Image 1 (cartoon, rainbow, N blue to C red):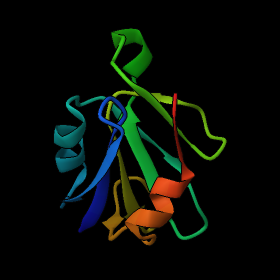
Image 2 (image 1 turned 90 degrees about the vertical axis):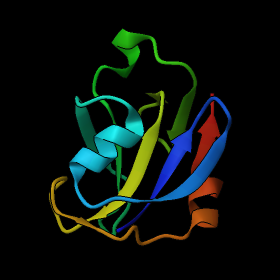
Image 3 (image 1 turned 30 degrees about the vertical axis):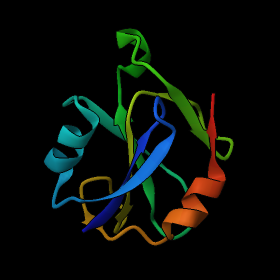
Image 4 (image 1 turned 45 degrees about the horizontal axis):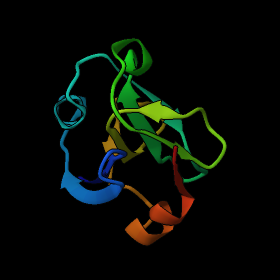
Length: 101
């Protein structure tokens, strides 16, 4: 499934392929992932639950949700964070919503 990986250090967003939350954990670099809904179409931002405790480099924020430290992955969902589908928005729309802190 199509997803986007946000790198807040390099300030880039790249398209990646994910098949499950294990792939998302690998893209983020940690197994302790959580997610927040970031839109009405089921897109979710997946992040390292302990990103601030670890002191991960780089920070970003999508719209007004809480900032994230370290890598984030945006993927589509069928209602729960474990049921993935293609991300609904295009990369340019996502980039326009991101602030690097």
